[in-house]
Length: 185
Image (cartoon, rainbow, N blue to C red):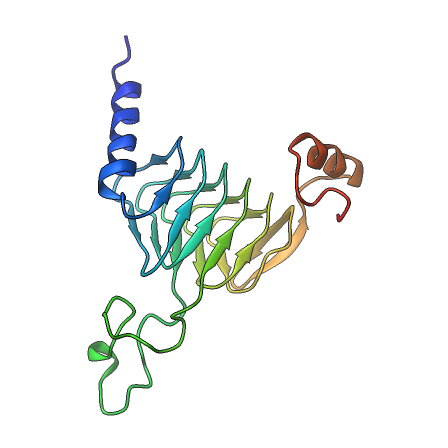
């Protein structure tokens, strides 16, 4: 009998219900080792979410169902320190985690819709929207919104192609997964 699988399930439930209890996290949460989650106001994660080892979310975010963040993926704020604080070195400037922080970025929320995969070592800036069904290639830097059912790569990330080879395959997929993009794409 393989004892590892049940132990991982228990570990993931403990993380979801105890360590990360201040956030809203759906069932099927799966986390690699050394993962960090932090949000100032809101972190909502859907069902069947996977986050790989050494990955982190350190910004307000809303993440859909069936999302995969690979190892060492970072979802980070865009303005975590007030680098324009007059008379204060950046190292000592007020930062997002401080109670009195009221500078840029305070209201930015990152949105990652359903069925998204983010490859190893990628970084996603705060305030961007990654639309449903998209893929972010490994080591990409996402600084702007990502179109639905697209593959983005590079630094900064740019669209390289659609996820499906034909429009017919895309439309069939959209209908089968009951996508909100049926009839739009």
